[in-house]
Image (cartoon, rainbow, N blue to C red; front, side, top):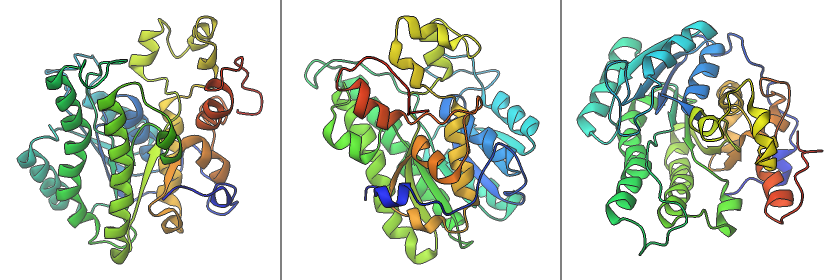
Length: 320
């Protein structure tokens, strides 16, 4: 189900900022919280007072195949610093026994799970290659990391989540249903993976509704993740320098922006109105009133549709 314009302009729901105690007593699992959107989401849930289990494969002593320096322990510490409680657990979400043990631990230690965020990724992408030009091994590995991990985690975590009415499941993806339906995502396997994650939220919505729980898919815009900043040769403090060689980068957003979107959804007593919909951080900022760290509200997917994709000159006027 795609989000209607009437819902996007709906002024209802709480106004969510960066911090508070609206999620005090709530337990969240952010699966895939080592870096990027997952880290931003975990930290903002912590800023709202939640206890957040943060999982991933990279720890201070072991790196995943992505071979990046960010760790789950760092994410947990950032959750603590934001005002929540961060608990780092090394988990390979392709290994059912590890996921089962994780959920068992959450149930034993906390007795409930209120928020599940499936943000697991960590895949290598071969851009601009057709299915026959791509490495089959790499492509199938992408699907396993992007799709199988989400299904495995939902299989084990949702039974605990639905024990308490009002649970929320968020499938983090790249691109809304509306955008992905008409735009090729520059790789057969990437395109397939992101469409599948959106569809997962649609299916979960039907299965969760009788249990008074909600499922949505959520996409950030052009994310200034650690890897993206590195690719552009900038830092968060100097990110605007990248606009000189990539003008549309002006619409980019921090991981905190999608994190605040998740925190707003989790604090909305009427979150069920979104069940089964495809959402973006920019869209939800208009509804809930939150901003990015610099006070802006970048609406990246509307910008890409109306400015970038038609080949117009970069101009973020009216999109922030």
